[in-house]
Length: 258
Image 1: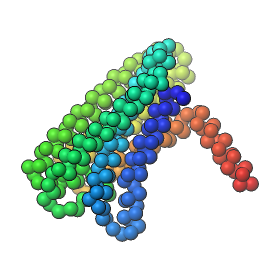
Image 2: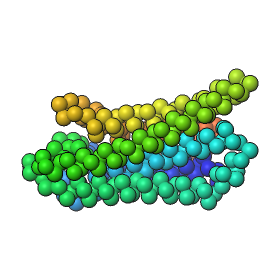
Image 3: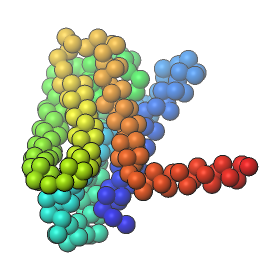
Image 4: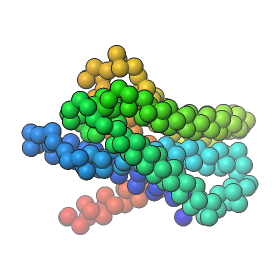
């Protein structure tokens, strides 16, 4: 019932959806020794990946603002981050991901594919699909990707500005223990954001000459699988209340087995 846990709930849903969109199909293809996917399945993957990853980055931006208000304006935190404001910010994050996905999916699959139907990736990724398109049509999707990159850059600037003010406020705290606690809450968030942005931009904006298959696969796994996988560890397991709840759950399970 607090803003932090409300945003963590939304982040968990986005992470779960992101992993579920790509990994199970890839595992099924590997077990069945096939690389096939239907056209509708590929379209759904493109939409869901763009929706969930775009919504996740928007939510990370909202969470940076939540930390800014909590540390820099603690006396006004309850007023600024009330339940209605939290719901609106979470809804805006989901809506931004939906609009981004709708734009990319409609634009990508309206482009004629002139170079076969083999996507050289473990899921239907937009840059790999664009390699199959006609050269004239490719430029139209590049414009959409640049617009998305600009929006991500704007979110990144907002996050950086928020954390500059957070660190400035934290450095004024006289207690070393309190400073360490504040920094430990902020640095993992920045690490996830940095990994998400750097690998995502490199995957989508790198020159075609720097696109060996192994590098494409590694970069794609980094931005689409690693952040959703480590987010629960970073944001949940570092929390004392959740650690205590997990400890009690484990003890209960062990007691019932005995």
